[in-house]
Amino acid sequence: MSRFVAKARNVVPKGQVVLNENNLDSVILEDGDVITVPEKTSLVMIHGSVLFPNAISWDKKLDVDDYIEKCGGLTQKSGQSKIIVIHQDGAAVDADDVDDIIPGDEIMVLPKYETKNLEVTRGISTILYQMAVAAKVILEL
Image (tube, rainbow, N blue to C red; front, side, top):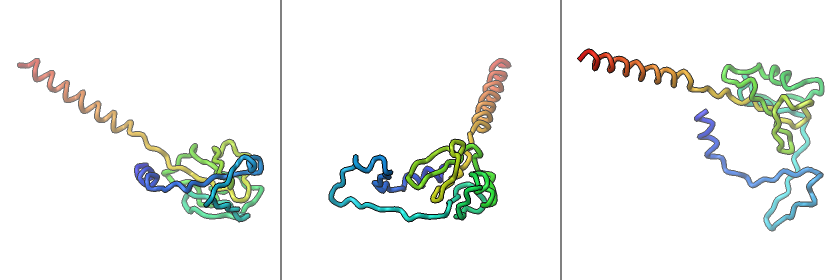
């Protein structure tokens, strides 16, 4: 997770705005603005915590889990409940809320965030043990 945070801090925002046909008339272009129309693609990108991140030809019969399996499945560091689908228009949606994958979608399997509960418990136990030993020493004086 710390590597992800460090990498995220170095990302420079593109200043990119994603539009769809419903909001084209509300945008005012300024000098220096660039309009980019993305290429049509028949691929679905799968990356993140999968064994073999890859681009796979879109197949209307496949769902999110099928695409992940075609990439070798999840890694041990994957967070099963942290899978998002990023549509070509820039919208990011939880994979559970996606009915159909469409050409150009990206499936991102986020890494599992490991909590430090065990370390915290160990630290508290060590402190309590040391306090008990100190109390015993004081009582025996």
